[in-house]
Length: 278
Image 1 (tube, rainbow, N blue to C red):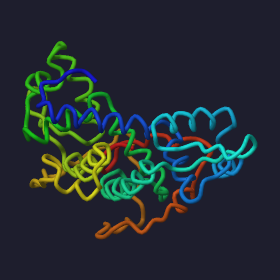
Image 2 (image 1 turned 90 degrees about the vertical axis):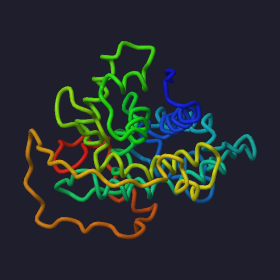
Image 3 (image 1 turned 60 degrees about the horizontal axis):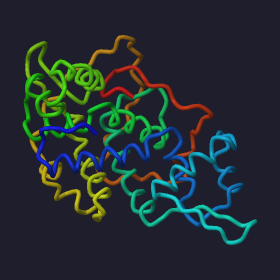
């Protein structure tokens, strides 16, 4: 990660969260982690749970997750090898319902109900945009910042105009808001609400219990939410007949529910409608 003008502790925090996102965001990684929930599995048993992955695709994914410290390979004998979560991998799973709760409230609604796994994957895609974490940290701490000032904070060693491509992407995603060209930027209501997810990722990446997310020095301090802005889609879709109720408690989905609508291909990014883009 490029050096920033953020405080050293914030810079280290962003680096850890960015590294965590890089571990879990690659295609199919979350699905593999969820398939390994429970007792360790042999390779063939795991492959049966993720049938859309060919053998040549599953093995390198497992190797990467083992290298990341989320999955462990146990060789019981030359013909008996199992894969299961490490303690760190198990500790990461409770972050997923936090992501689903945010997605169900702030991601745009689609014509068909999406399983939780697709909600997670779409949300992670937004969070891994280039410079997204550093920009969101800076906007949360400063509330409103001009593009030039934001460039000095996030990428001080680069030409300040380089801040605009990632900023425009975050605005298009619905996580950052501005009144227009030359005016300050701020987190949108959806971007600010990601604090619970970012705080949980921060706590996990620092080796702390997830209960520490509520005490994060930045994301653990709730602020008044900005008024949501009306997003207009370039390809409007009909409004669903009934809208899902806003969740007011912990999500009721179970890990087995995540695969209830699994497809053989990764879901396409949906068009911006009434919330951040999928």
